[in-house]
Length: 159
Image (cartoon, rainbow, N blue to C red; front, side):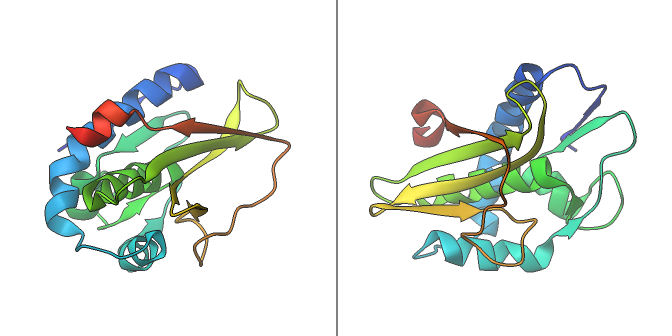
């Protein structure tokens, strides 16, 4: 079971561990998510599996995609928060291997040091596709005073 449960240190530490959980999730994503024509298809495939559940108080819980779906911390398949959903969505998009696609993560909040929300997306065929699985539809991004877009490491994608 790939669950990382720890006290929140800072956003850099959290992002390092999110990348590790994405790496842990890649093989599962290839077998769990079918080939999709568009990023919206990935969103609509994943959405029915997911149930929003806040992290335990004072804890940063980062679940890999297989753990989120099969054997997670809450004992409820698909239960997690925005970072768990982001890990799953990035792994699912990486499994698609869309030509020229650039997978990204966005961090949002009042400032760079303390984001309050995270989601993923893909720049593909000249369009940006937001995949915030806490929303009911794809391509919807809530407004925040500060948003930082981070491109997922291409070396990670091509492995």
